[in-house]
Image (cartoon, rainbow, N blue to C red; front, side):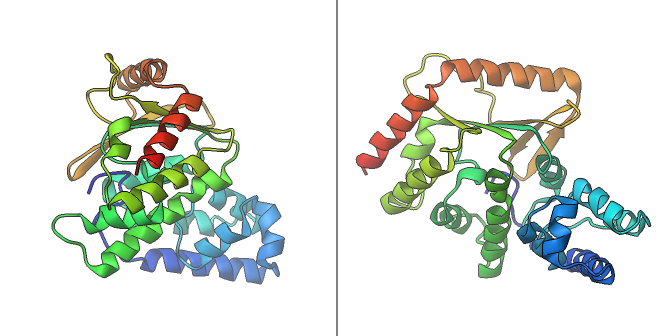
Length: 276
């Protein structure tokens, strides 16, 4: 099932657990508790715990800050280069997932399903259980865990600008049934309340549509670089060629002008919710 790259690969997490154990060993050797380590690396205690337990893929920013705390030995940087697997994420999505961790802006247009960052637990499970060929219970649980972990971007990155444009038809599709859809809409409305998160709905009766070529994701890095990501059946593509990225940014900007305003979008979702 396409959508944000959490796909069908129940990959080994040995390298993550090994790296996490290495971080924990260095921290304890330095005589630091997680609470003491947290302000030094400026990552949450929960994030540090997840990394040390091998449940989360660390990003380079964490590695660099931890290196400074541990005396710039270079050992952590070398260990980081061997981290190549991330449970629950498709191979083609991993580079994009790393870029997301430090992006200053993330823009997403979807016409197939609700973006992973906004999905409710019930909707996620319905999507994964509909996959073909069927996933095992273990694969479903692995992908659920990966997607829920990724959703912490919305909660923890309050300085990142998030923009979502979603076709109205996505919410009218009722994946999982009326009850799941109702829970999904409630979750989306709650998740898009923060002022750094903007949701717009592309209405069914709109006569113009700038993104008919398909869904896109865009981001900007702290140093001003722009990237795009496009995903389809069994594949995904990280786009870094400037000319291509510029075109996709232009399309997204045009789509924002065609979609409903954030206020009208919330009103439409509330009406859809009320009709279930």
